[in-house]
Image (cartoon, rainbow, N blue to C red):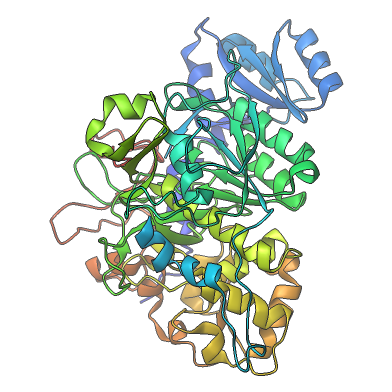
Length: 576
């Protein structure tokens, strides 16, 4: 029998008991909300100072810092970084002007096959349609669409002829080149040119896009949350100058607080509200160090409801999509705190060949990843949701080249509707499915242009026609079917037209006979994990054993057993 309580009940028991109850404090008076790691710092009663982010404008922050004799380490547009010890943190939390305090956490990093399997090649070629006119769409390359790459920097390379700006926000550094080697690889996936040096790389997804190098990560591939936020604020302020329509965030840190108070997620919201599509990697925490499956490994800012969060698939180096699978390392949902469905889509991310940064850390430390070439014309192979996010950022540039007026919410619907549902991953492993940019372009055109000859079959092709956005209610509503909405083709225009106000917690399915509506809720939501349990209703924390005999790990900070992990903290080493 189906339980009468919601799935999130167990999450509340595991997470909120240790955080929300601790936020209120034992006594009366004001108490700001603290993230889990800051609660631990406060409890240690140590004189060691940590960097924290406090919300407010410059005058408000200066007043707060003055009252508590604290130094403002870094002033941002709507927040600032302060350094506090345990006692100062307690005093700061008691200040009525402070609503919440967040850590200035360190973030870290998370192609010919990719071009073909995602439909990018078809989009760049275009089609003539019937009589060379009806049903046609032009060849697009992302021409003029600015994609900001917030990463470890971008170094000069023979395949990069479209970098239009270079800026640095790494504290204590001025250089913009890629000392680590990750950002250059990402840039090549988004919009590198085909140098014809190797058959394994025939250019990025959107070779016509304008790339904006925003260095926010240091020589070791990590960086401060505040530096990432500063980079995002620069992008927002300079979006018109470079026509920046996309931000790629192939980085993240473990989730320690709700997305509503998470500074990175707040920065994502500001960027989206400014009309910029934000693409974020889901994280590489799909398995533990022992190989056990992990659920709940989505990292920040991938837990933002407004980001397009991307997981990775393994194409097994074949053009056929029949053998595609969710990459084991790819982080699965649900998200911490909200228990929302993420990722939004998945894309090729395993063993992608792209550009190698000359004299970078990755080049020196991992020569086995080198594919060919030398100097400023070298190539290497990497894996991870970082790469998958870059694929999607390039695809978004293609869609915006075709339909420049699309809003971030409309882009998300088009991407999801054009994707192919991944049965092994379910919604929490694969989101709406594996991207196909050609199908997404058809979906956008069918909804925005309303071609006279468009039919449901021609619009969807092999895509599943599913889209959603969620703040934590979709899983429960999928079980009771109040969250499934079947749409006729004519309804697609209304959905796209009202994308910015679309209801959260609803799985929109295009086609009155859409086959996803007939999948059992357990299978629809959890994919193959549902087959490992005899329960009708998988609940957070359920003891589920994989076919290999390992128990599924439910990401939670309450577990002390070494086989369990904190939310998103198990680095699997699959970024290779």
